[in-house]
Each structure stands twice: as C-alpha cells, then as structure tokens.
Image (cartoon, rainbow, N blue to C red; front, side, top):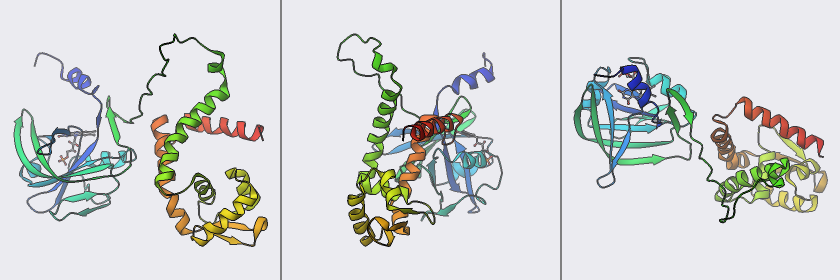
Length: 309
Ligand SMILES: Cc1cc2nc3c(=O)[nH]c(=O)nc-3n(C[C@H](O)[C@H](O)[C@H](O)COP(=O)(O)O)c2cc1C
C-alpha cells in the first residue's frame, strides 16, 4: 500500500451510509449478527443486495455458509443496538427484542426496514467476503433510518431546495427580517407534512387536536381549557365531543360546557404513532430528538405563547 491506512479509512468515512445489522444462524443453529454499513442495493431484477464481512469477524464463517440471512436497516433511535452488534463475540441477542422467521433467521424488532435474503453468491474481496443476497421478502416501517458518517451516528435531514424566484433577481426584502414571518413559514412547512399524516389516520385536524390534548395516562380537561388549546369554539366542541364519545375516543363526565373530558385507550392508540412521528420530525430538524437547540426553541416559543395571550 502506498498510502496511509488511517487516512484511507478517514477518506472513506466521508461517504455517509445507513447502518444495518445482518443476522443469520451458524452451523450449531445459534443466532449470529453484526453491525454493517457496507450494505448496498445491486439489482432490481432479480432483486439483489450486497454487503461485505471482514474475514476476521468471528461470525464470518457462519455468514459465508448461511443459506438465509436478514438485513435490518436500523432506525434513528437504535444506536444502542448498533453498538451492541458491533462488539465482537458479545452476547448480542440476549438483550435484543427478536424472534425467528420461518427460515430460522433472527428478526430484530423496531427497525426502519428489513430484507429477508437467500444467499446468491460469495466473492473474495481482499480482506472481506462480499456476500450477494437475493431478496425474498421485505418489510418497511415509517421510522427514519440511522446514518453513519465521519465515524459518528447521525440522522438525515433533507436539504430544503432554494426558494423559487420566478426568474426575478432576489433582494433582501424587509419581510425576510420579520421574526413572526419566519414563525409562520416554519409552522406552515411543518404542519403541511404533519397534517397529511393526520389525514392518513382518518382523523380530522380538530379531532387530532382534541385527542392530542387528552393523550397521556389520567389526563382530564374541562371544555373551556380544551377549547382554548384546540381553537374550537365551545358550542362546536361540545357537539364534537359527544360524537367522539360515541366512537369510544373519549369519555364525558357531566354535560355541555360543564363536562370534564377524559381520554380512552382507543383514543390514545389512534394517535400514538403521531406522537412518535412528531419526535422523528424534531430529530430530522435538530439531529436528534432532545437537543439543546430544541430545548431553547421550546422555551422561546413558550415565551411567545405566554406573552401574547
Ligand atoms: C457503524 C458500523 C459499521 C460496520 N460495518 C461493517 C461492515 O460493513 N463489515 C464488517 O465486516 N464489519 C463492520 N463493522 C464492524 C463489525 O460490526 C464488528 O467487527 C463486529 O463486532 C463483528 O462481530 P463478530 O466478530 O462477533 O462476528 C461495523 C461496525 C460499525 C460500528
């Protein structure tokens, strides 16, 4: 080699990848698994993927021999699973939520997607084996994938395309310096994505707002409080609550504007994935779900809310 191995590795790490766990069973039917970022798609017809395993991995002989294996694309909240499966020889499946599929391959829960594969070919690739798999089946969730770049975990946030200028030269306009104009643009962009997901659940926007405000164990609210939080006038809210009670989405103690409204399990289940989606959207903006930046924004928005009542 005519160049420095460390620098070669660093240069390669500027290529951002996803993170996967490959799983299979060894000759003694014991589950094997390892974290892998060398996964890639190869062919649509037949559907082929590839990955490469270092020849010195303890599980390399098992993966070379395995007729079936699964590729799990990890979700943004699975860095702990990634670290566990990157430890050579560790008990990787003991603390990992998994089951076995009909081919006996371990299937790990909570991933962004999974590809169930049959071995198609194995090639010598220097100090790695390159394993090609034919995809027999796949599974996909709405979870955002985990990214690995420059030796660190990350999440992917889309680069916003620059605004259309309709061919007119762009100049700094006073409106671009208005703080609350930015607030409304941010709200508009975030909510147009989120509202599509609400509609996909079969809920209207007011119903989502009501269920969101009743979410959580033992949460109860008066009609006036709910009206202020959901922007629904009390007369319309009272009617809406009555029909939501009939659907089992909430319960009412008392009548009309004096009713106390509680959430139900059915209502909570209906919106649980929207809460999850909200934290995924936060993570895609801020890099992870709970950052200093997101806390600062939370506090600042609270200040705006309490001071503009
Ligand atoms: C983000 C990440 C990506 C990795 N990608 C690969 C890979 O593509 N191929 C590989 O052989 N090892 C890769 N590794 C290292 C293996 O996960 C590690 O060597 C594993 O402990 C081998 O397990 P075993 O010796 O128990 O078989 C990666 C590790 C990390 C943290």
